[in-house]
Structures are given as C-alpha cells and as structure tokens.
Length: 249
Image (cartoon, rainbow, N blue to C red; front, side, top):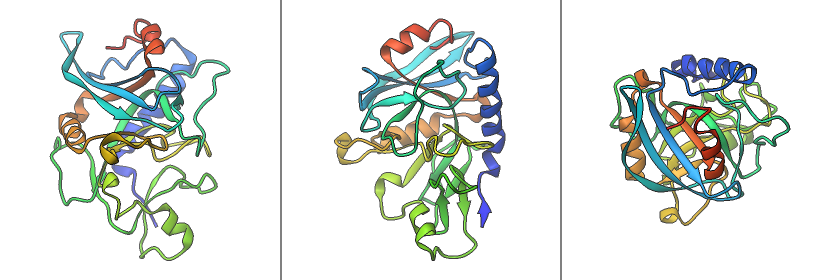
C-alpha cells in the first residue's frame, strides 16, 4: 500500500508543530493565516453551526458574504487536537464519540469523485477510487491517514476503511486537520472533514462538518493555500471568551 498524504504533509507537519508550541506559550492564530472559516454553535451539545468566512486585509479581519447553516456531530462538540492549546483537564475527542472537534485547525486538501473540481491551482486534490482508504482503526500504524492500495480491496478490514464510493455525501471532502499526521494519537479521532450534508441538513454527523453541496464547492474554490487557511469551530460563549486572546476574526 502507498501512504497518500505526502502532497499535504508540509501543512500537516506545521499543524503538529504549532500545536506543540501552542501548549507551551500563549496562543494566537498564525500571523500568516489570512483566510479563516469560523463555525459557531449554540453550545457544546449543539449539532448545528453557522459558518462564516473571513479574509484578513490590511491587518483586519473582514467577513465575506453572509453566514450559512451546517451540521455537526450528533452529540455536539468536544475539544480536538489542532493548532490550539487544550484547556487543562478538558475532555478531548475520542474515536466514535459522535462529537465534532472544537478548536483551530489547518485545512489539508480535498478528496472527491469527480476528475477535477473548481479550486485554487495549489490546493491539493485527489480523485477517489475503490483503492483509496482513510484509516479509522486506532490499532493501525496508518491511523487517520489516506492510504492507496496497490490492489483492489479484498479483506474485510480494507473494505471497512474504504472511502465510500456509493454515498453522494462523500463525493467531495475537505480535510480538517484534527489529530493529523505526522503523529496522530491513536483513538483520539479520525476522518474529520467538511463534506456534503444529508437530507438537506436533516441528519447529524459522526463528527464532521457538513453543508449543502454548492456551499462546499464555493468554500473550496475560495481557499488559497498561500494564505494558510484555518478552521475555527467553537461554541459561541467560548468563541467570545477567546476572541481577543487568540486574535480570532
């Protein structure tokens, strides 16, 4: 098998290094991040959020367009592992907890079914085939990594890790770098993406952030890797508390 994360490894490595630095010192959004996606939920147990996008111009954050609705994990939010420091003693995301990771995260590339998509030339895109896996097994050395098989999936394990081919909701996916390589923590949560919602937003997720297809397509087209885009997902009260210290939009 071939590990398929090399094309986005530099961004994910930066994510891991910044996470360690954030634990040791006061945290702020990276100064070179000038695009920010913000998701605000009513509380830690909310399964909906409002998404807004911001650009930093002349040192000031400015919102682009109007917010839109998104769905989150069935059980709400919990602190994730990203760029931000995790509060001492806080519960953090675990595999299978049905919660979306809260915090600040790099965005690490796009996977989908079409041959091509509308995007910035530098934004990584991979067309998914039946040989593409995203490993959600905490016992695997490839946990929370994209893997491309050199053969058709044959074992029950390989088929379980397959990036789904018959599900329209997974036809376009933008990676949210929670617990990301180079050193994902086994069992701390995997396969967190922006992807297309189900039943026009009538269904919750297992931890991803979902939205209508056109919104996701426009979001992906807007992203510019040179501007180091990040995703901030927090309950409103937590966002208001951290907005100043973390220099959030």
